[in-house]
Length: 205
Image 1 (cartoon, one colour):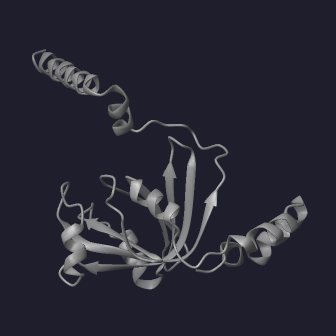
Image 2 (cartoon, rainbow, N blue to C red):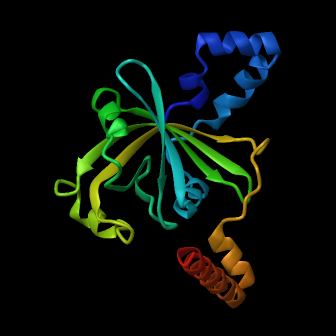
């Protein structure tokens, strides 16, 4: 993989760092952060995520950000520097898909709001029709929510762990369920019962 700073710290960025007095710090710090392959910590972190954000750029230079989600483990590690996940039928705007036709470079954010950790990845993405994808990989895709139409494959070019500053602490639903145990299901069932009752009462007005 490439060094994240070498890839992302353009001359304009370095000029701003120099103005703010951080350029020398980064020049000392970042060269030691280059790695050849995903570490086990990187892999474990990615595999535990139930969503990520992916940014692409269209042919006119406009950026576009899309959210991808699924059950934990829906992101597969397919190589020492590559990941993949199912691409489902969406609203048929095809913005990300169209962008990748002309520019494969993407930027990904993997967020862990509970532990306030953030992994940034720069990569090259391809969308492959599920009929043309590796059958072994397709068989492992999470297709409980919807059938996969394509496979999103990303070759990781560079990555960087970001600081926790300003990341809000949020507790995901499945973590709450683990904490509360059986009581969580009771509360969720009761909440749904109340929602249904309110809907019934509103319908009878």
